[in-house]
Image 1 (tube, helix red, strand yellow):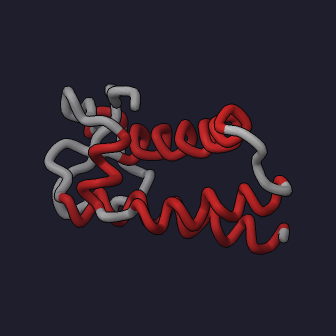
Image 2: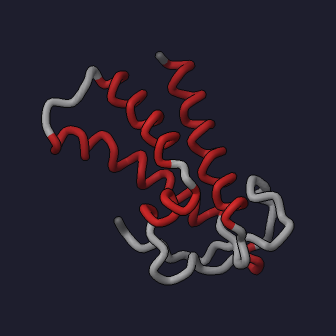
Amino acid sequence: MTELSTSDTLKKNQDPSDISGSDESRSDVPAGMTLESIIDMTGEMKHLHELVMLHVEKSGGVTCPASYFTLVSPILDMLEEEIRFRYREGMSKDQMKLVVRNWIDKEIAGMQCVI
């Protein structure tokens, strides 16, 4: 997994789904923090798997590891960008979980409207 580093952050007590914060309040995701470690820390792996399986179902399945990674990589890239955008310095584990969970829920809802 790629290391997350960006100029985005989240103030304590700020709603992680609120994107109205100024750029000055943002900071880098901590060095060494990977998407994999964030998913593990937040306990959202099963939830993310649900989203991935909806994509697999919509695509008609996968035939090999390469086709699986072609399908999954854009999903992970979009989640990583969401985390970079919403992350704020001092963000708690629960706030990070909320960012990840809300993004996955939004994507699942969008997929279910399409299926």
